[in-house]
Structure formats: C-alpha cells, structure tokens
Image (cartoon, rainbow, N blue to C red; front, side, top):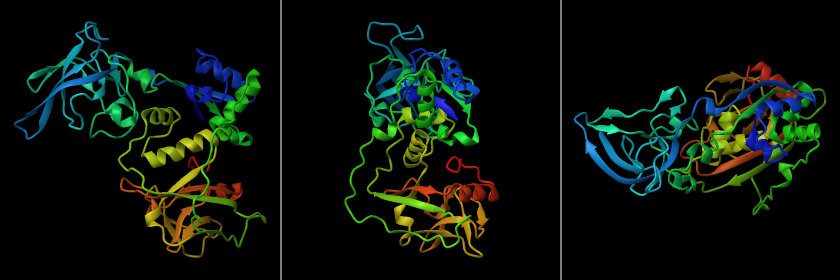
Length: 382
C-alpha cells in the first residue's frame, strides 16, 4: 500500500516536514512493515511554472502540420524568470486547445520531466523554443497527450510564475508499507491514518464521517440478491447499494491533484468516473464499480454462475465461469465477477453520460477464490 503523505495528513496529524521514512518508522511500531519511498520529485524537477499565453500565431508547415509560435509570460513583469531568463519566453507548441489569455504549465529550460526528458532551448520550425508548454501526460499525471493542460479547465487560477509542481501536488511523497493478511483495513488511507494515530498518540479524523450523502430522490435501480449455493453456508453478498448519476460532463478532466495522488498511490489515471471510484476505494477501503447505465439491460441480480456461462472482463479476456463464482448480472447475463472485476459490455467510456455506481459487501471467501481461479489479483479484490 502506497500512502501519499498529503492524503494521510488530512486524517492524521502528521507533523509538517515529516518524511516518508519517519512515517514508516511510526507505522512499524504498530506492526506494519516498511517497503519503499516514492517521490515524484525524483522524476520531475526544475523550474516548472504557471505561465500566461500572451500571443499565439499559427504557422502552417510544409509537412501539413500547423505549429503555434507563442509568447508566454512566465514571471511577473519586471522580474526574472525561474530559469534566470526573461519574464516572457518564446515557445513553439504543436497543440491547439488553448487561446491567448489562458494560463498553462510551462517547463522552463533546466527542468526534467518523467522519462528523464530534459528541457533546453532548441531550434525548431525556424524559432528558438525557450521551454515547453506541458500536457498532463508529459507531467506524468494522466494519459491525455492531445492537448496541453489549460489550468482554467480544472478550476485552477494561480499567479504567473508560481511553482506548478506545488500547485498540482507533484511535490508529494508516499510511504509504501506491506500490509499483512490480518490488517486488510490498511489497504486504505482511512485504516493507515487510524494506525498512525495509535502509533503516535495524535488525533484521527474518520473520512467516512466527513461526507454528507444526499437522500435518494427516486425509487432507485432494481437490485436482487439471489445466492442459491452459498460457500460454507455464508451468503456471497449481504449488502448491495446502487445509485444512479445522470448527465455527466464527459469532457470534464480528472483534477490533476487527484490524478497525482492516484499515480503516487500506484494507480494509473484513466477517466474521471474511474478515477473517482478508485479514489474513494483507496481513501475509505470500499471498492466501487461504475456501470454505463445506458448499457444495462433490466435490473441487477447478484447470483452464482450457471453452467457454461462466460464473461469478457475489463482486461479484454473471455473467462469461462465456475459455478462457485459470485456474479453481478442483468437481463443479458453476467456483467461482472463480484468484488473482483467488471465486464466489458457495461464498461464506462468517453461517451458515458449516465452511470450506475455499485457499493457492496461481498463475502471474502467468494472473492478470494474467484480472484485466484481467474488469476485476477485486482485492487478491488485485495
């Protein structure tokens, strides 16, 4: 379990300036095992600042591509930029998803990005490009490489020249601990924060008590639990909660601070819907699953697999199901292996606007056996 310190500090009183090594030493005192330390700053450092686009001149090229020759203010007027250069830098940019006046992230000469990508002034397309306007992929906080990160799209406004590494939470560090089988609750920030509070005698704030859940405004999505063959006499599911969310903005990006925390915790940012479910799972220890509501057929039934049933899971593999497997099903058949992995047929995508969120309590033996049987050690099953 990787524990970003900024996240841990929200629920336990970790002293300012305490290192990941010091946090792990405290956790060892309550029986957890130290593994490693992870710091994005080891992969990304140097002058990376907030800049404002002053001008943007499109220049068609002989190869059919159009580049933009930009003037970008990277320091307040009358001051020197973080790299020691002028307050305004000329930068060539191939992306086109920004306009004059936008605030962006500028990697100045001397900075280094993930993959040991060193930034330096370079001659390109007839100009000296004095830095780079960065995308989330280049910053290591997402997969979008089609356009640069425009700060207004994530609700961020900051002073020109301010440190973008701090702004985006990329100066964080994580303590990686080994969680023993009897301490499964420590696969969450909530559980680790509680143990840290026990180890140090500080206060613990339970994140589960900080959330006000809106009351349902309708009858809800139909769900039935029908486990006819429980393992060892224990029902495979004793609680299944579903909530419908409609009219999502599919263009909304994952906030970079969230993407940065997930990445530091060892989970790749995928999309806003998936990232939010993963974030809640890591924070509270409660796995969630999101279904594309418009791909569901009829109500949901939680039951054991029937002879001959198959399911194509989210890892794009068709799996022959065992009659011990506990399934999530709709009128079309299996749409997920309970507590392990969802099915491809109801997967959310870039066009999903209506979602059904699942939060359930599945019996651990069913989860463990299915995860081993299908060789699917997913985050949810752990």
